[in-house]
Length: 242
Image 1 (cartoon, rainbow, N blue to C red):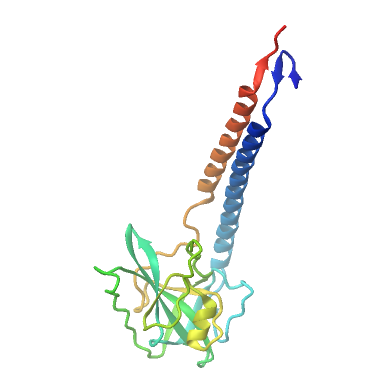
Image 2 (image 1 turned 90 degrees about the vertical axis):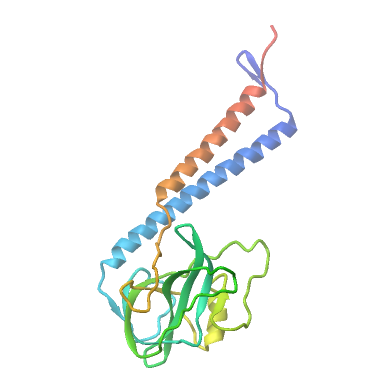
């Protein structure tokens, strides 16, 4: 291809490799922009929903998502026989667990999972923290949110079947937990208010970092794609011989 005084003549192999790298970098940039947009939407929903009146939950929750980021009040008792320790949760650089305890309410007809907070890992993996709590009737308050995101499995089956209580889990598998408890557990987690006597260290954040971080990453990926394009054109262009 003749472009002015220059002849552009890349090989097919170089063209294919450059095209693949360019498309991958552009896809990563667009992915980061999409994540930034999702974070913006989450922040907007958080601000809007937290301004609404506190929910007084008297019936089982449905699964349509309208309860996200709402203050909630429940009257019932903790299911002290079935508690979970959500593994691989870090607080200020220290590994530990999130203590998740089912809470039975609505005259024993409904259950919701409650994040009671974070506890550090013991000296060994077998040294589990003490998470005892009494099952006397009580009123609890907190914020309703989605279940925690799942950790990468790398193709390994991470499902926990059976085992003693409290049960160490890697992810909140709502179907398995429903089978464990004998209830249809809704896909929400109530983050217990810090002032509650059953709460441990609360480190929950609806968004781990702001959208600015993802937007910065997107600019980096797009810049790398631009560099690949410039190199592809520059290295495959030669001044024509007169």
